[in-house]
Image (cartoon, rainbow, N blue to C red):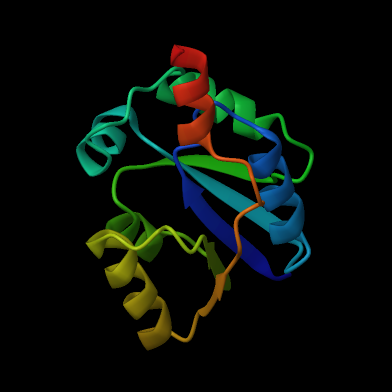
Amino acid sequence: MKKIITFGVFDYFHLGHLRLFRRCKEYGDYLIVAVHDDKNAVINKPNCKLYYNQNERLELVSGIKYVDEAILYTQIDETIKGVDFDTLIVGPDQVNDHFKKAIEWCKQNKKEVVVMPRTPNISSTEIKIEKLK
């Protein structure tokens, strides 16, 4: 069985997230989605104002048919070391130091890394800005 993992905040859940999970599932048999905890999501994204708390986001993600397992994570570069997986899927915008370290760890440990393009014209940030108008 080939296991896939992807990481994100997944606040303001939208069609782009759903499509990401569907496309991730095409790479393997078992999809693990790691949901960022509240504290570190705000630290890593200083302008982040969460709408849903981490338990609500875990519940949302867990309810998606493409997702086999949803877990909570603090920092990708630490969490990834304790998860059994074959392929890491990241977005092109996931480039902070923690993601860079995680990708390097994957390369050193013979894990596949796939950079998945974003769904065009869909962004949590844009949705939040539109809601605040």
